[in-house]
Image 1: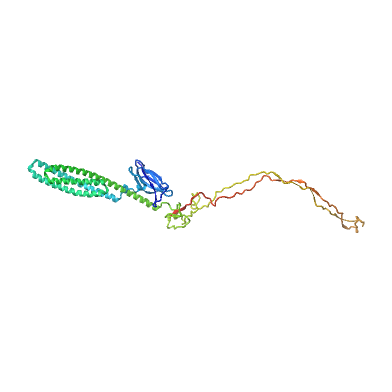
Image 2: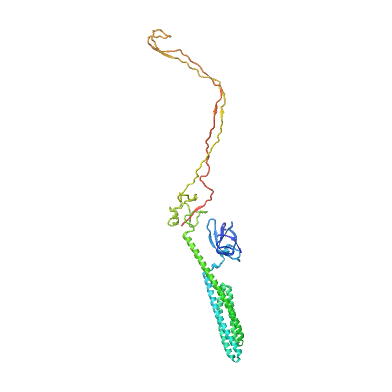
Length: 465
């Protein structure tokens, strides 16, 4: 049968602990659950939770999204357990909560019950002996009335014996009453049965007193004493049963105490091991969502540390300096790269291709104009000079006097040759060929100052050890 466990999970300041995993790990096999199975429930935005737990015993753990799970206690769910909060079940007393002093107390009570049972057995034997003596005295009185005084004396003696037994029983009844007070603190059933024993002993005492007062009723009183002895025997049997139950309970309590001690020793040993080794190895970088690190941790910002004070940290950072993780992230080390080596940001090598589609513009004509006929500048007037040797007489030749034969002189010819050229231009056009060609293209740059991905800023912290 499942039992509803619901409530709100809060911390010491009363703030709701949202998003926490409540984990139940079964400690033993029951009709509803198998040992070592695990059940988990996540608290809501306001820390609320509600789940139905099967009957059994569980270790309870808590875990958040940034912490490892840790044990907060254990609970026991019974078929008749009432619904409640997780805190109700964690703080409920269980048989495992018995302390050694409580177990010792139960052992003392069990010993007291044993002593009382043994004394009741002795009283029962004495009562039976008194009853047998009373029977014999009654038979003798009926057989011979002349010996009535003798039997009366014997009855008186028997009555004294019974009275002594009654007195002893009364003393033990007082012990039983004292034991009853002790039993009342821890076991109501033992108190009630001890009260029954006390009442029966008082009944025996009254019967013995009646035997002393009236010897003539010895036979009847003997029968009554026999009945009382039987009642004492029944109560002795009940006391024996209670003693056995108390012994069994003491054994179970002792075993529970031993189991608790063993569990405590194991837990203490585990805690000692954790303290000696550390919850996490020194040197691991943790993402911490605050600017103040927790106790025993430091923000990784390139600061030096005392290697003698933190030898475990010095083993992984032998330089004595904690790496500066501000603005950096962690990368799985590829083969061939040194541990703790730096790598600047960069873009993987790649290229871009840009092209303007070619267009054939063909031949294009310029604008036309008629320049008509144009004349060049006139010119060209010039003389020709010749020279030679005259071998004849002094006869004039061409109006030139040759005075001396063999004379050498320059002779200028008549000038001429001045003229003008006329050039006809006429209307015309010029054709320019553009042809197929391309243009260079420049691609504009874009992007941030560095390569990034979508991110949330955390402080990297490291454990000091």
